[in-house]
Length: 387
Image 1 (spheres, rainbow, N blue to C red):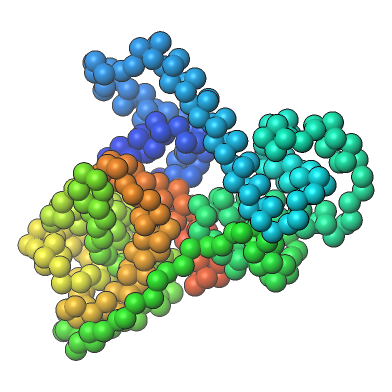
Image 2 (image 1 turned 180 degrees about the vertical axis):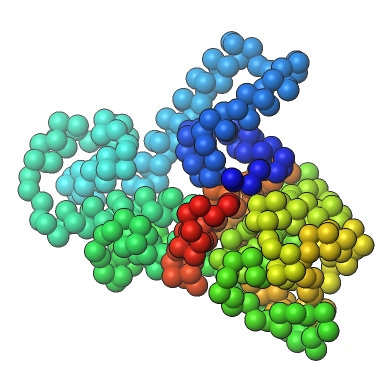
């Protein structure tokens, strides 16, 4: 029987579904739950809030829908112009080249009529030009470029050519050379996000409580868990996130998000991990730093009650929890630093969506043979194993 979902997970799932950025079915699939389950959560949340006087009227809803339609049209036309500028920056402007751009835009779902109107070319002329034959190599490049753009977009613009190539080969079953993928991405102006390298100092002697000694490579699930806290600013103030990672699969198995970093933050994160994994008593190590949240009496009691073995690295040494530091670095460059966050709620929901809909189920890891954490765990454990 699958483990129940913690209240914080249900709350974030409802807020994500209400944003409407994806269909309910896709959101539920990304979160690893059934569509009916998510709809039940939505119905319950609506019922709980039915007495609220702040809901928009039907006229307001109609006006909002119309504004959203106009906004989508403006975004589409702006996208056409931006891509046209990038396209013509690397090509000599000739009528045939404009038609080539119209075809590329059409391949990505933009209506031909809209592209021709914005680029000021004849729709009938485009279709006449389209009837001319295309070389097999150019056709294959165009097909690959379309798939590469889709993979890059699906990765939230984070994948470089190695992960894009892995997704094409392992995920889509395509046969394609790495150099060809790199060249087509370069021509399309696509690239991944890169971590800024900084200096790392502080190598102190290990403490006696350290049960890990920087040996993070484990062969079994629920053998070693790692935990830490990060923070990030918004216009309203900071948001704090505590997370628990299984060192074997790199999967985030527990998390909690709040506006303060009290002991409850880390206790809730480890509580989610325990609820989801139900580890065998006295066989799972939980490794952390010496933060006050992890040295608190309440956190120590939670570990003892669950039968977990506590472990702490050296004071002030990032290497002693480097796998968690690497996870935070990935989140930093792929999510946190990519925009200015207006509110705490906006950032909290974005962190939830990034972990549960992208990092855990889909993001490919070079250290896992280019599998996602969820896929890696599926290969390790039998299908009927609890979630």
